[in-house]
Length: 70
Image (cartoon, rainbow, N blue to C red; front, side, top):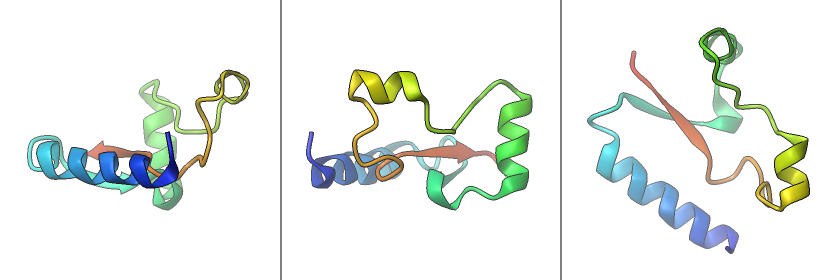
């Protein structure tokens, strides 16, 4: 999948579910406090070498983010 396609999908997801699931934060802009909170509840947004090996992390972290209910 091209980077542009990933970014198009990201925009569509934000438009469709953004109002339902909180505020969208691109992974590259998630604050340290939020990263620590996500980690404490079992959600990791760090780059995973296993996913690198499988080819899933092309263009990481572009097109990836998390919804946080604030």
